[in-house]
Image (cartoon, rainbow, N blue to C red; front, side, top):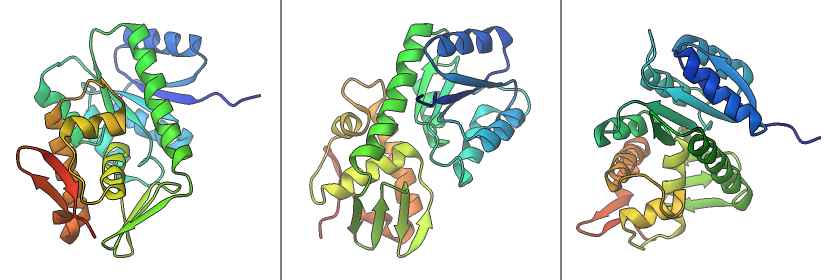
Length: 231
């Protein structure tokens, strides 16, 4: 028997939490639920789910703080996170990505769309592991190990979110080539993915910061996009 993928829902509104849970269970997933951020962190650490659906507006510790905490811990650093938000403004979406989220969906949402987005995020995460499972990219003292989802800078391991990791790997696999923001989105998320070009800038800033002294190897080509400096 194939093991069901486990999803964690962190949502304080009981009606929404049960609606999401029902639709995901009907789609064949194992679901665990939390009503606030602290409980969500506890369950994420205990169960290490395959994906976390995380509301931003939570009592106590809000969803953005929860997301940042998940990204800071080794056991949850790689877990895909989809944030739920009642805000559709671009700035709020970007704040979510800055906190380490991999995807977002705005309320009110169609349960069918939510399930489709969950399936797509899980599929992308799984395909990334499969297609590059044995590949390690080495460039400029940066080692990108897809099997371990690990980036090493001068031998030191540095934590990256799933999206940051995918962008860095894509650029490192194509050194010297310039890619527009939309080309980067298509490469790491799939065509027609609903992410703004500005969010790529946020991810690049995060990548540069984490690369430290090697951050300037990810170059901006004004008016075009980004590239990894060639050998």
